[in-house]
Length: 92
Image (cartoon, rainbow, N blue to C red):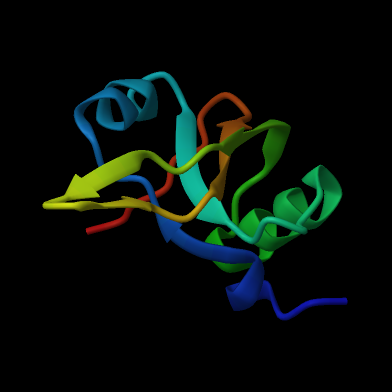
């Protein structure tokens, strides 16, 4: 099994994710090869909370143009974790 800190790379900090946090949903950038069971286990062990469900989405990297060269940002995987009622994660 992979290391817990390798499965979850970092939380997604955005306006939408902060609104979702108020209703008990948190977004994380995770390893592309991580599955929902590993993500659930990692969140429960790292933050000492109970996870109700996990939704994942593969995000395609955007195409960026830099002068005459067209480049691409890397693809990444996002996991939206729903916690049980009354549970909360403090990032700051």
